[in-house]
Image (cartoon, rainbow, N blue to C red; front, side):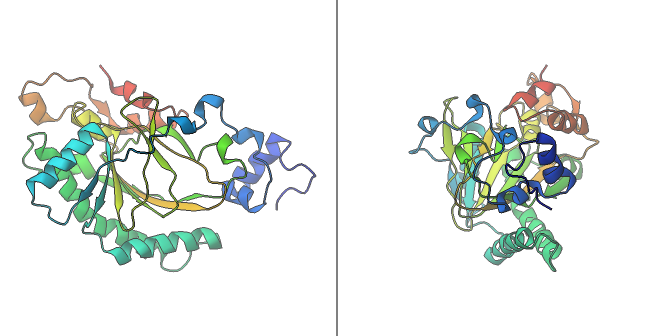
Length: 310
C-alpha cells in the first residue's frame, strides 16, 4: 500500500520500505504520480547529464551484417570494438518477430506486474536466436587478435555463462536531477542490447567529457565490449563507460543479453597473445571475484577495471 501522508517519503525509511521491502520498486513510485523526485534519488551535480557535453553530430558505428563473410564487415567490427567499444548491427540473423515478441512481452510484464504466460519462452527464444550472432561476433573479434580458432575451451571462456535482464525505466518527474543508470562499463565479454524506440542510452565519447546518444534504429542490436574482453584482449578492445538518462514523458524498456565467462574462470591475457610475447597489462583474476568487486560498490565509471590492473 502506498503511503498516505501529505508529503510522501519525507521519511527516508518509508521510502526504503515502499520501494524495497514491499517490492514496489521505482515503478511503484512512478505510478503514484509524484510531482517531485524524492531527495534520495537526486544525484550529485557532477553525475547529472550536462546537455552541453552531448555530441549531437556524433554516432557510434552502424554495421550492416547481411554479408558476414565480407572482410570489410570484419574490419568494421574490430575497428569499432577498438575505437568505440560500442556499435549497432543491422540485417543480423535474429528474426524481427523474435525481437518484437520479446519487447512486447517485456511491456506486458511491467504493465501487469506479474509473470504473464509465454514470457519465459519468448525470452529464451530471443537468447537462443541471438547465439548465432554472438558466435559470429566473437569469431571475428578473435581473428582480429590472430586467434584463428575458437575451440570448446575458448568458447567456454568467452561465452560460458549468459544471462538477460528485462529493464524498465518509468517516467520520472524531474529527469534532469537523476539518472536511469549511472556511469559504468559492463563486466561481460560482450553485451547485446535490444532497446525500444524511446532512447536514452549514452556512451562516453573519445573526448573524455563528452557523451554520444545511441539513437534507436528499428530492428537493430547494440553491441558493446565488456571488461572481460578488454582484459582478455590486453586492452585492444575497449569496454566503454555508458549511462542511461531518465525520461520525463515516456516509459522505456530494454533487454540486454550479457555474454560472460563462467564464474570459476580465470580471465587474463589470452594464451595466444602470451605466446606472441605480448606484455600483459592485466593480471589473471577469478571472474567471480571481478564481478563481486563490481557489485560491492556504486557505479563509478571505469574504475572496476583497476581491480585487474598490474
